[in-house]
Amino acid sequence: MTYPTPDDITAAAALITGRVRHTPILKVEGAALGLPCPVTFKLEHTQVTGSFKVRGAFNTMLSKGVPPAGVVAASGGNHGAAVAYAATELGHRSVIFVPKAIAKEEKLRRMRMFGGEVILTDGAVEDCMAAYADHATKTGALSVHPYDTFPTLAGQGTVAREIEDQMAQSDLGGIDTILVSTGGGGLIAGVAAWFRDRVRVISVETEGTNTLARSLREGPDISVQATGIAASSLGGPRLGVMSYEVAKAHVDQAIVLPDAAVFDAAKRLWEGTRLVGEPGSAVALAALTSGAYVPGKDERVCVLLCGGNAEPDWFV
Image (cartoon, rainbow, N blue to C red):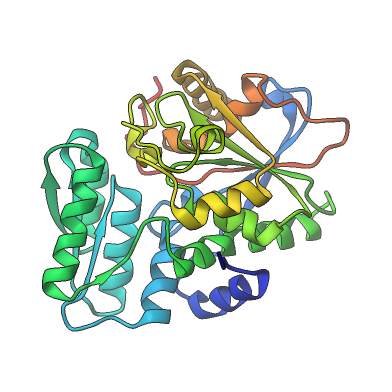
């Protein structure tokens, strides 16, 4: 299967330039987080819609073109907000299908604030995906998939391109390892498609959202009923087909953690930096704070804080 190359990701970066923020990195001393080593954070939760998803949304719309019927998406929140924002910025209508079971009011509010029409669906995430696909078929709207198309992965990969450039120009001089929270796999697949085998790519999930770990163990034909604190951030029922192929080839390790480790990581992040991310962001950091991933001496580690669309006191 063909998935994005670094050249494709560079082309996506040029296409979305000026539409998304070039988010900063922040090097934090280990002691502030209760760790023996420093950590560099990519502050993607400060992105224009509060998550990385806007990169793939813009790349999809700009590379494919949008029909008069507008765009349609299915989302627990971040993808929906990104699609709504990108569509509105480009002058298009957007409809977002959201599973009622995992809908969070903060994320619904942001989707509507960015101009999306929100439709809540009953049943599981898979039922929501079916409803969104049916809408695309009936109306002719452009389907903007959250994690399983070439332009989505290429767009998400632009964040890895930024990270490598920023860390190379910092006093660190480069990057050895990146920790990425995984849901449907679009982000980690984009990141791994950029880095290939030049940087160690580590997936981090919770026990209730362990799509990548299960897929690598059991194969891609699984169905995960998302539960727990990260369900609205990372609650994909399975990995995308393309994401699965990238993960098999270029993801080095899949870590699965309990929710308690995520709460602890979020508290340490707040106490040590006064930064607040959503649960999905804290999941990546939890690999370090829980001891599930122990960096080697002088290993240059980046934690990707992927989103910030949650109530600011969720971890208290």
